[in-house]
Image 1 (tube, one colour):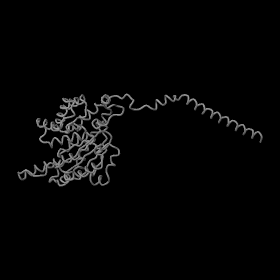
Image 2 (tube, helix red, strand yellow; image 1 turned 90 degrees about the vertical axis):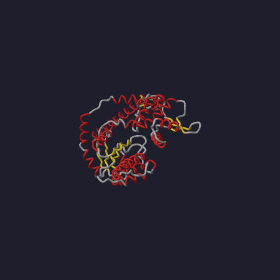
Image 3 (tube, rainbow, N blue to C red; image 1 turned 30 degrees about the vertical axis):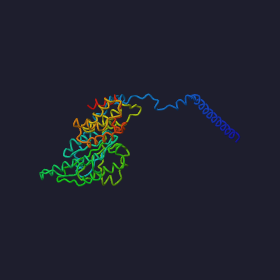
Image 4 (tube, rainbow, N blue to C red; image 1 turned 90 degrees about the horizontal axis):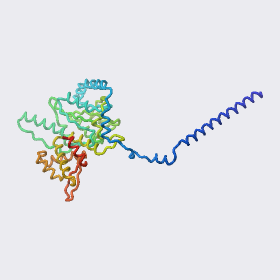
Length: 379
């Protein structure tokens, strides 16, 4: 019995010695780690560093470098695009059945939807809405749809009776509810006089509010209006309730990942670790101007040329701009000019300043160099 007890005691002593060695090892590791830590002054200097202190690359140079990255998997992407084009007839059939098409998936779907519209929706009038723009005049979009139907009705009645139709115009002066009521009363004998509303990024920053989505849902319910849209935000379905999805929009969902870069859509989102400066502002303004009518671009050019010729003035008076535009036959009335100015102000292309004599002056918020470059690229 004694030896057995002695052996047990020896095991206890050995076990205790191992625990002490392990604890001593932890202690040494702790103090070694503390010795390797930076001093308090260096640590404070490191902690007080800010992102603004970094020497960021110019965004235009960064985007140019990104554009030089060679595309990958071109054959696979091309085969994927062909598979989508094979579905065009099915998409058209669903539109004619009264459904709206909603495209989602990784990659820009802008070229895909525009190709579908140009090759398949040839019997319909197509109105494109670029939802990725920072601001959108939704009333003007709805008024444009109404004007298309108004022209169709006017031509139809002229063929039937030989007289011009007397319909309320212009739609821009009517309320949105009145315009939608007009659209709801539009019918077609052959069912082919439709207008397709093609919305790139229906989840864009200017369309994410409940009022805009409800307005689009009401338009989609109009008998002669069809909607084709794309979305990219993962939480975009939260914009709609059950009634809007199944009763108003009547979405038919299609997963169409294209893996195409968001070249146009991404212009309005500055790159991380890049300094934007005037180059980014000029590029954004160029994209907006290119989406406007040629007359609107010409009006903007008149204002820009005046600002470049008179850099020390507070801006161009509205009356002077109207006179210049009338001389160049760009506008026919003050109402037309005001519609262009509203478009400019909605997209932050123009600011209004008060002149010393109290009258309103128009000013483009760009430095002279950036404005000259913008006019060159717009030409």
